[in-house]
Length: 466
Image (cartoon, rainbow, N blue to C red; front, side, top):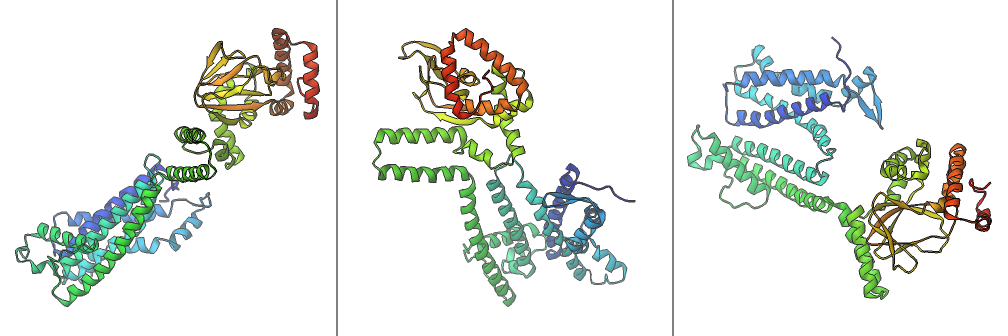
């Protein structure tokens, strides 16, 4: 019976790999204990042996029918999959699967059952493939990668400590403690061995348990060398993990130190230094120190379009000027929006100046006032917009707009808007009609229109010109 092809990232394969990983850990823990304590007739031992054999055998079959990716290209050819697996983990999986003990016993080699027990250690070869399963956990979005890396490091240390503890018991390391010599004290023997292993691997070594025989001396020497290596790995990894738990914050702090050094070196007044630090604090709180435009520029155009559309579509669609526009037109507009930040008290637009930009409010509040700021006409907040008249014709600003607090805005300039309109002549006709209506509402005279058109001739013909 031919198995279906399985996608390597499918839910079934993920669950199956977790299952194989768990029973491999079970075999890694139980098999050394069975050997060192010479357990011959454990009640569930035949069942566990059969479970491991059947599970590992099924795993080989599934691996022969699981796709793999090369440079993000999914390989689905069965022959290619088979060659890939045969050149990779097949031999190790086969050795871990083959039921050596039952087969040798059936062939008449079961007289010395103690020797046959050592072949059970071959099951542990499957542990080498656990790395693939564990690497999947690093892709989990709800867990910090640094925390996961630390957890995996602790996991492997405990596996190594378990195996070293079993080795210590095997060479008779616990025989020097009289009250542990009883055959019914397996739990105590293991606890003492594990205690000795941890104190040795961590280089603490209280000296309360010491080697006596030559074999024990050789073993302890090996474990101490292993412990020194593990200790160095632990210290190095923990330092890296702590540094990478919030790498964005680390980079931001480094940047702030450089800025502070520069400000002091150039003798910038203290008040301005405070304003600069507050600006960067806001940048961290709102954007984690990253500049949106720079991040988007690193993406391919297709992804950049999707992200920009998700971020800005709702704001654009609220503007009456863009009602009835196609999705492609909206996409081109959002791709050309530029993020800007204004600090408290900044004048975004000033009464009487010629306007060339429209603004969309992403975060913050702004006051719309008269020329001297004595009258506040309105307060704009997140999701609102202003300055759309500048996209229709470059007329003087009719009010001053000043930020109350830190404000995240998106800006669209008239030249960019005109270039976009040229690609959508049908919608440009609608915009021209809207412009004519707004001219009448605002009482824009012909002389102003003429001066506006003259000012725009150097930038190319505007789609709004007649």
